[in-house]
Amino acid sequence: MAFLGRSNVGKSSLLNALAGSRGLARVSATPGRTRLVNFFRVGNELYLADLPGYGYAKVPESMRREWEALAVSYLVGRKSLALCVFLVDLRHEPMEGDLTLRAFLEHNGLPYVVAATKADKLGRGEVARRQRSLEAGLGKNAKAVFVVSAETKAGVGELWKTLRAAALAHGA
Ligand code: GTP
Ligand code: MG
Image 1 (cartoon, protein in one colour):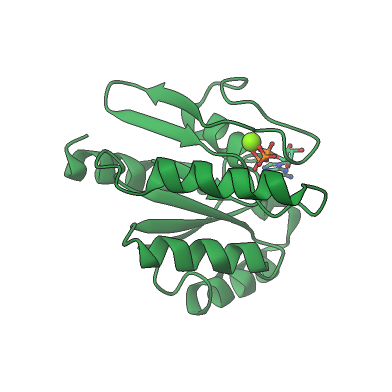
Image 2: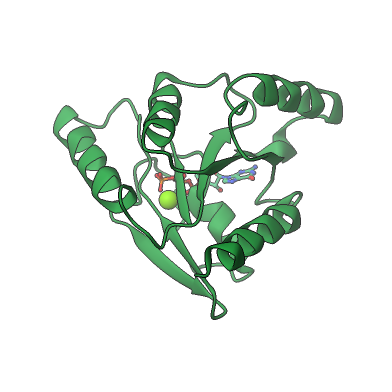
């Protein structure tokens, strides 16, 4: 499983929430903290990969290219990759980097689910409205769209079930 999404979207936090033990993945207050691919093993059957975020405005062009090279070399042609988890911030419209990532996943035939993070920051009505918008828009070709919160753990159990099922089906 690879966790992908722009910087500060909450990848490391969601990994921690999924793994159920805080401090496992590195969580950053300053965007652009996760620099390398970090791996976590959960139980015997599941490897989770925490990739660095993209699209942070202050990141220089050279670093952006570095990210692309890293992501491409990690993701493309990796047989053990059962599923990608594509994170977006539930509160915001997709950024250019999100659209680029989606095009990249689809171009390379990589299966993905969308996980919309930070649901705790919106009210119920707004959560439902944003979820529908994601299902019709950015996430329309995704296997599923999940609304999650690393803070309250909402949706985390449901995402976990899907990840486990994908890992088992993949024979990982
Ligand atoms: P990079 O490693 O820089 O790419 O960032 P990241 O995507 O790993 O984000 P990270 O998990 O470090 O979270 C960034 C900030 O968002 C931190 O301050 C987190 O506490 C906060 N955050 C993450 N998930 C949630 C959430 O579900 N709810 C709320 N309220 N805050 C969150
Ligand atoms: Mg991170």
